Length: 323
Image 1 (spheres, rainbow, N blue to C red):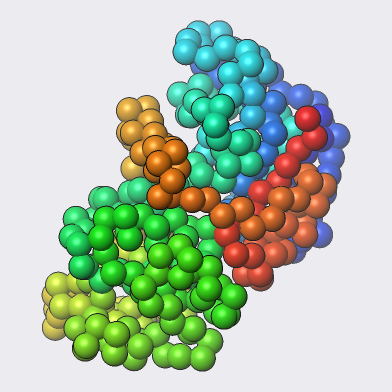
Image 2: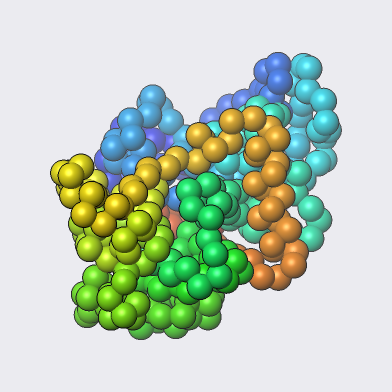
């Protein structure tokens, strides 16, 4: 089978299309014939060596396809079932072996491209919205990178719960997309100071909840843009790790800061299916819409990663395998 494998960490040039042996599923595993894979910033961190991975290594932790073979002891899945998954490496390939316990049944109404686009970001949006602060109608939520795949899902979900959403973006095109997703106010951070704008928009009180996947370049400002008794969640650092802070700086306005990673919110299969099914339900009801920015063939993975790394995409980037 064909796969994008890295033999060393580094720049885009380490992404190479290889012919490798098709893996066999072991006990409790299935082999998925992949039709699509979702791109995420964790792929870039792993490629660059910021999240070290054992080499050689096949990137990609989010995929969708059809069950092709079933290992010993697997129940609940059979050859031909449509499935999606996240959290296991190897999705930049024509096939991948995945624990059956990690599979999400994929309804016929959901395309493979959508199936590869929703698990990681959709379930991340779910825990970021529900696990830290119970949103009430009228609460102000500031979402950084609001036109990215994560940002658009977060914007729609917060609006669905009645929040007032402020999004930060880098371009006018991204501002338009964020507004289409439901953002009430959009701050062009390349031209405006997001702290000043957030406080202006909220008549000086600040945002009740700030959701930050940018890190450096945004985090220090969050401490000024958040409301008294407000909550800041950091779930990624696309702009680099944020600078350290003094814990005492949180006291003056009773600020809460939390960090999150999706695996800690998928402790068992019940939790996985609850989050995944809530995302799928939102998609079926129409209030949660995936925006797939671009679909690249597998061999174009370097170009796809370049667009993601340079923040040139609006929405989710997906790799598609030949049928």
